[in-house]
Image (cartoon, rainbow, N blue to C red; front, side, top):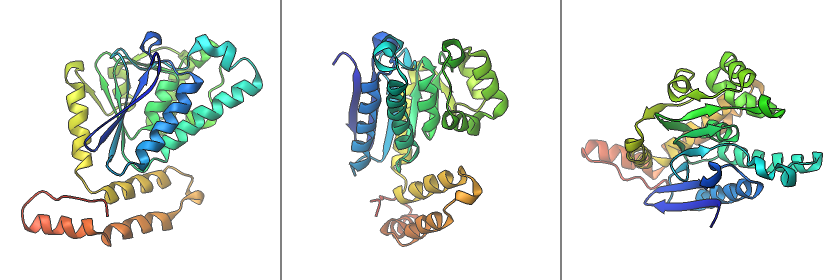
Length: 261
């Protein structure tokens, strides 16, 4: 296809690729919708334990919205609302995802690309990655939830710098701001992310789900936190066959084989 969302599954790793390399993987309305559908399908695939998100072509992760489609997709208030609902649905699906997600960032990660990366659990970038939120150069409003998610990672001082200046930040600046976990040379990034994903996939899925659920609750306002949900997720770990497998494997000095049950 000329552009869209590509999905590949290799072992326990699902890869979702934003595929619009001619426009640095800029996102159209259809791509936001397709990405949500792809995430949901990977969520229901029991064989998949980790999802990697990346961009086609090696020069961009996602460079934001496809501005060439603004006249057709975001020309009126109603159209903007429809477009924003699609982006928010994708972001919320990613934030609520039970499986671990890794953003493998090569090159440009701009605007909506930053929003996608921030919604992933881990962010691995190559050394030539560039980050920015150019809303102030386009006259766009940047929504409450988008700013909140970014601020949880980098703090108000860097949110202000990113959005006030609308400039691009290099990979080292992004690491300094805590926007990315690691910077890896481009020649090594695919292998690094694959090893990271395999390492996570080999661990107990219920434990990882419990950690994700607890982190999600901790990011909510204190009054809105569902502590009972966190306790239930932990209880499920201790009642699982995987807990028994983990103990046996430790005593038998072998690698555990977890089933997620």
